[in-house]
Image (cartoon, rainbow, N blue to C red; front, side, top):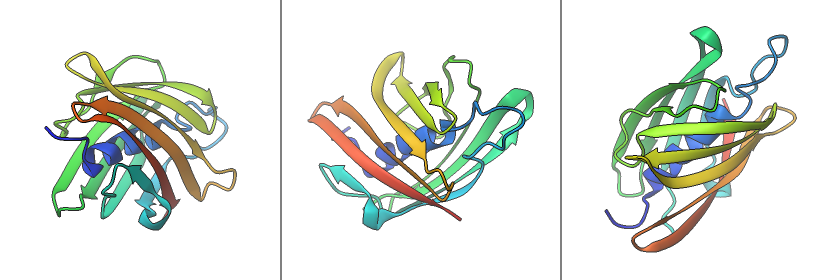
Length: 161
């Protein structure tokens, strides 16, 4: 596999955005629940290319978990659909539909900010930190990793729909 693709970077971003706020209190709504769309004009990847699009939907799941469905289109037109269900217990859980990562774990920094790690076959492939805005309309964050071509970093912005 060549340098991390925009789809892989978006998968990682979606995971982080999903996890942001998932550990909020029972009395407060989870700020990440809903539908989010990549704001490609405000997002960057180094090295490029940036993805064409991504939409993900987060729903509450039993046992305090959340379920995420992700649909994205890479710069070259490649489409990806993936899903996972995660809780704020710090344990790695399966990621399905991705050749890049097979599990995810995260740490809740505060009700709107999350740090996470993605792994493939037990090896860390990237990590990131994402924050939902105070008004709940956007999520911003960065993720980084290293592959056979070297280090990469992306800064993403998602808008709530």
